[in-house]
Structures are given as C-alpha cells and as structure tokens.
Length: 417
Image (tube, rainbow, N blue to C red; front, side, top):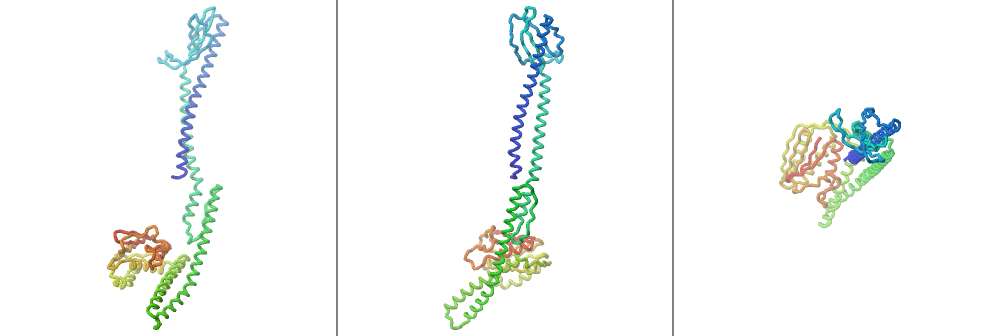
C-alpha cells in the first residue's frame, strides 16, 4: 500500500468524525442561539405589555401584536417568576400544529391578577436551522472532497522525486557505471536521501572497477605461469624413468592445472565482457549457427550414445558473432556434460525463442541461483561453476532473456529475445 493511500485511510475517517461532531454541535448551538433570541423577543413583548398596562391601566388589544399569540386569563394566584416552555400550537391559517415557544408570567391590572401567555412559532427558527445545517453539511462535504483531492495531488507531486530517485537507483548497473542524474527537489529529506544514493552508487562503481581490474590483472598474470607449469608437467609425464605412482601423481596435478586454466580463461572472458570488448553487433543467421554446432558435437554425442532431436526455423538476431558462438558452445556443452548415457537432447529454434532440453539425474537445479557465479549442484564437481554465469552475462549484453525450467526428467534452458 502506498503512503498516500495509508495516509488517506487514517486522515479521512478522522476528518469525517471531526466534521460530524462539529456539525452536531453547530446544529445544537445554532438552535440554542436562535431560541435564546426568540426568548429575548418574548421578554421584550412582555415588557411592552407591562408598560402598556401601567400607562393605560387596562389590558392591551390583542390584535396589535401581529404573529404573536397573546392570551390573558384571570387567576387568583400570582406567579412572579416567568417560565419559558416549548409547546405545540395550532396555526389556523395553515390548519396544522407547529412547535411554538411560550412565555408564561403573571400580570396585575386594576387589582385583578391575570395569567399572561405570550406565544411565538418556532417554524421560522426551525427552517433557518435546517438551512444552516444543510449549508454546513454541504460545506463540510465540499471541504472533505477538496481536501482529499488536494492532498492526493500535492502528496503525489511531493513524493514524485522520491519514487523517481528510487527508480533510477534500481536501474543502476554496477557493471556499467554511468552517472545517475537524480531529479531536483527542494525537500531537505529527499536531498539527503539522493546524496546518500549518489555516494553509494559512486562508491559501489569505484569498488567494482578496482575489483574488476584486479581480476583482469590477476588472470593475465596467472596465465603465463600456468602455461609454463603445464609444459613442464607434459615433459615430466613423458619421462620414461618415472614410476607408475609418479605418473599418476603428475596426472592429478595436470588435471588440477587444467581446471585452474579453464577457470582463468572463464574469468578473463567475463572481464572482457564487462569491459565491453564485444560491442560490435551484426545480423547473425542463428539457424545456420546452430546447425554448425550440431555438426561439431555430433561425434561427442555419438560417443556418449545421446539422441539429439532438433526443430529449427530461419531466425536472424543482432548480436556479437563471437559471443553467440561462446553462448551456443556453453549451452550445448552443458547439455552434454550433465546428460546421462543413452540420454536425449532436444533443440527447438523459433522466431523469438531458443530452447535446449536435456535429460538429467531427475532433480531440478536451484532456479534462484542457477545463473549465479560459482553455483554448482554438486560442490565437489570438477566444473568451476562459471558456465551458466557466462551464459547469463552474454545474454545481458545481447538483450536476450535467459530462463530455466525443469519438466519431468528434462532440464530446459530457454533464451528469449
């Protein structure tokens, strides 16, 4: 879940609850204020009536007070305390009862006590309260909607440099240390993150370059001593005075030197690929290349009683000639080396796909590590574990996607472009 979605998940309920509580309180407060204003109006009418009776010593005419309802009722009790109450009163003009506000007090005229009741309808106040409530609710809804849209737009725009920086950092390849052009931002936290990303990528590229140069130099330096050791071992093995035990010991050393030489050649090849020494790309007849390899491997497959089936179509790809040759050699050598006697190899070439399948020992390779350097299914194998890694590296520089599957008893290496 994105940060903005999580923020809205918490922010919107809080805003709605806050506005709901505020709306209810506003409705009650407005109603109370309007009711208090009406009560003050009733008290003013009461004061005018008292003033009229004091001056004229008689009750005022009722029809002089417009919408107000004024009633005088003789009584034997004096109630000096005025009482406000809310009642239902029939409005003759509308033939229905409306909520009204009453002020009940006592009045004395010419020695006679009267119960004074002043009534005023609350319908005007009620309608005004409703209008205010509707306006308040509409305003609250509009504020929530605008706040949601504003936050979504503003937060998306504010966080854009963050996601863009992470995208650029994710596309950074340590083997191709091109400088990253991060977006400009005025947010201090994002600038802090970008500075660290820039420092980390630059440091990683520098360390990788140093390691690559060391590997290349070491491989070149090792190559000459290895050639000298192999030539010396060749001479020693041919010495007729050696015993059989000595010969076996020298053969063991020779195999170790040969393995070390293959490892050195693989490292040199990977270093050359990293250094972009195979940048020249030409249109390659992939069908013809595969057919050439079928001829080259035919004797080896016959010696191991391996049955080969091939289905090839006319395909042309844009790649480096030498790398494609190495790629096919590694794939077919891998399918042969890890096959079984009387096994099978199936080669299928389609317009955008090459599949090489071979029988194996019945168990899948680790798909997460199969193209990693020095990965070997059997740790004590004589192989250096760089063959599939070289395949992956060649695919990367050739815009080819490698994949591995295991179906039934068949290991399937697939190249897609």
